[in-house]
Length: 101
Image (cartoon, rainbow, N blue to C red; front, side):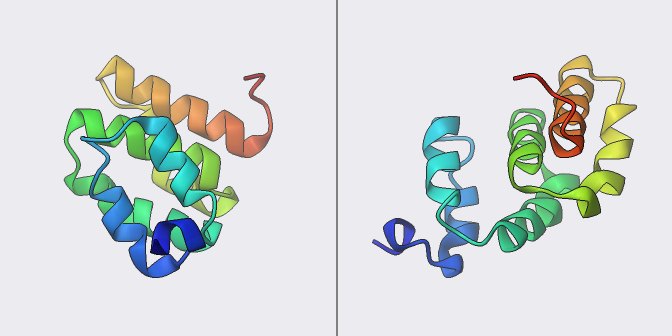
């Protein structure tokens, strides 16, 4: 119910389901919450995430982040794992308003 109301207290609980829920469900729930709080919560999880969750987190940063998250994306843009680098690059382009998707 708190997700439906857009309560920020459940951001971490929603992010905990990243490996279990479909990406569009997670994004739908988070769009009701404060974007800055969502971006901060996503940033805190980047370093400890597995590859699959990391890609999803980077994608969420592209949606909920602003120019303040760009330094957090840079190390992943240079990542040797192609899927991670692609997700970070796309997130960066979305934030900069250069993406066409």
